[in-house]
Image (tube, rainbow, N blue to C red):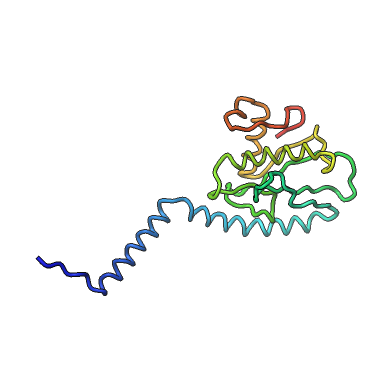
Length: 188
């Protein structure tokens, strides 16, 4: 019995079909392509929103890109205060939304995004950001007795989880975090 090698004309379509099936499998069986598409859509909209907010908030002093977790390239926070403000001020810790997939550092305070990072990393980062605010309260004009955790979409969920961890030590232990806030200085 003699076996012949497939002709070149047959090998190319077979390879292309295999490549096409592999790409289709990647698109169907992994969440990454869909996640990246959602990220692109949210990022486009967040840039427009950030630009509109900048126009609507004159007279605000900005301290941008404050690192709150040494060595973490996605862990920075921004502090906004009224121009010329002195003393400690009530503080809103706002965590951006975006389905845990979007929210570029240039538009919001940063935390790690999926699919590149897994839960509960963003929650640990939020806890560390809060720890940084408390540790540097005097420099950042933060009234440590009047802090509100808030956010939109995924940011609201992360803020609610941190508030729950503050009020429920068992839940905090399950998450593997030690909140620096207390019930007395934090509200959600």
